Image 1 (cartoon, rainbow, N blue to C red):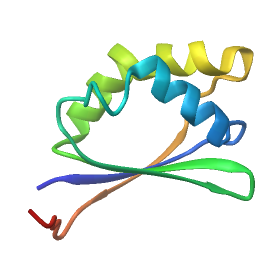
Image 2 (tube, helix red, strand yellow; image 1 turned 90 degrees about the vertical axis):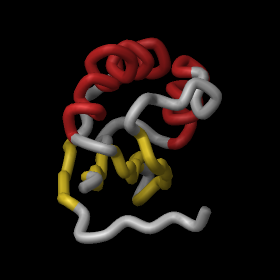
Image 3 (cartoon, one colour; image 1 turned 180 degrees about the vertical axis):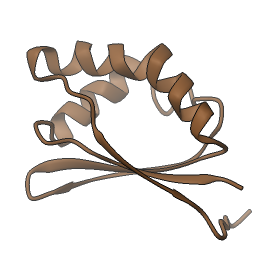
Image 4 (cartoon, rainbow, N blue to C red; image 1 turned 135 degrees about the vertical axis):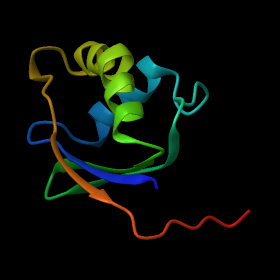
Length: 95
């Protein structure tokens, strides 16, 4: 069953998100295992909602691509997000 992840960043906002997406060539170069993705800003802080096939898929993406892209986009403000993980009871998409 897919896993839902919420990533909360304390120092990054939507401008940083946009630069990170450019560095990743996202969504053009869609990560393996990512099923859905959304980003918002809450009280000036970036929050990302993802659904992945597995936590292992996300961890591989984070290690191989995401960390360096955030570093490129945010420089000395780059940070690791606080991650909240929840196994999904259900996940539907309109096909």
